[in-house]
Length: 447
Image 1 (cartoon, one colour):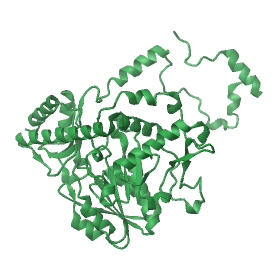
Image 2: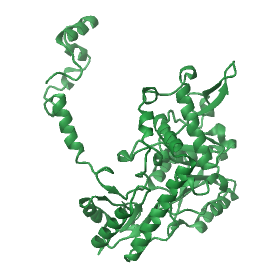
Image 3: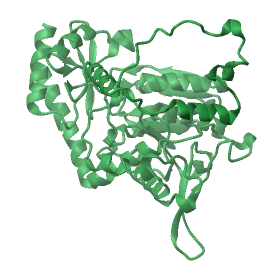
């Protein structure tokens, strides 16, 4: 069959031309000078029928290496986790997947309540007073925390650990450059932030001390000691954190964090080639009116019925420009909903069990690698750790693909001192047989 996807007859075309008062489509381009108009043929393939095109695109997609075709040990910011089936059922409902910003509460109560539940769940996980309705991704939220801290403290320097995800640091630099905020990076001591250097770098001019928990190398930072350094000179304490890990680790709010950010991809959002994700931003009540993005609040109507409305929006579109603290103009409502559904489906016990399985699988793999003579970068892990190899990580990963494995992240791409180091992620989905097979293959190719 050769019909168009959206049928348009010559009669339809002529009726449209008559309506706007022209005789030919070329007249629509009359304002474009003749000499700059393209006269040749575009270098594209001839049109195909819908069936042929779908077949071609399907064959192209089969070339992808995914978590459906291979066993993944790749993390570094995007993780292969269990997603309850109910997630797709809920977010596929038209009232959610077609929704945008719920500015009109009288017709958006379902969307507003879903966002409110997301905020509540994030507040509980982080042990913070309030969370916003979500942000574009984790790195965006992290960078927004820096600019908010600078605005709150009126200081122009942030101190960030190199244990933070390197892409989050890149986004942080971009944000801070535009606002004239100095970014000071502190080196690691092994797989942890060097606390002595962190203490030396933080001073009276520091708006925030910023770390990740667990950090990019997978190690669980000592937030109790870092909090003392952050607050010694009246700066803010910012923690970027994996929310699944917070199901079992002591949350940053209990260590005195002022702002907690992160990415909820671990709850209900597939890896899907790196995005989109869903950032979260939580803070103390003292900082509530400075938070970026938007918040949904619970209220009552004139008859006493429970309701939800947008409130406390700190961007320039909603308040005076000179009072605005952010130009973030949207959120990730659909992905936030996916995370909310996943967290609700798992429940407190399910999330804890899922987190425990990550830890158990990770330490099982660590011990298996050590028994094979591999050198593991020392550190207390949640579900990631670094292992030193004798050969180039990319070369080994290419070989692992042929065996049905997606290998770990090449840390040498980020820092040359970690040349031949692979960052391995072990989630609850990995089985003992998969771990054993991967360790065996890694041992063979590393020999």
